[in-house]
Image (tube, rainbow, N blue to C red):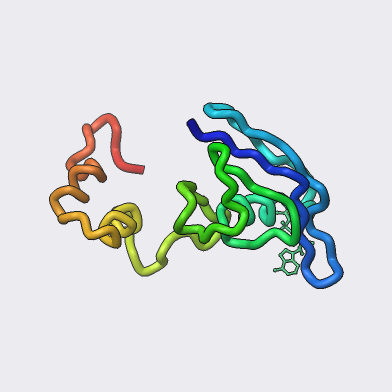
Length: 126
Ligand SMILES: Nc1ncnc2c1ncn2[C@@H]1O[C@H](COP(=O)(O)OP(=O)(O)O)[C@@H](O)[C@H]1O
Ligand SMILES: [Mg+2]
């Protein structure tokens, strides 16, 4: 199960309110897109869910557990950054393998999980 529940979330940067009284639930298996004009608080909301930003008030529950003040590393959640998500000095293969390397996985295991190998001629690597 992977339910996300947000209750009355608010984020204020000094006297500027970026997110105000936001509540919603994303059910297990449900796909939710946040749509809105630039600056309306989408990224700030996602950063709070991932634990990269602390809310000013409100609650965040993952699978019913209150994670509002848990560190990002203590939440079982991933975040794909909009920009600058890749290490520029690494190629695609190394970027994909880096999180596994950081977890101490042996190189053979990384290779297997990354499905290294020659692509079929009709399906070249992008
Ligand atoms: N660290 C910050 N300090 C001050 N203001 C911020 C900060 N992060 C975001 N904001 C402001 O909060 C508002 C919402 O930003 P953001 O969540 O990035 O919007 P969106 O992703 O919807 O475009 C914007 O006005 C932005 O300038
Ligand atoms: Mg954004």
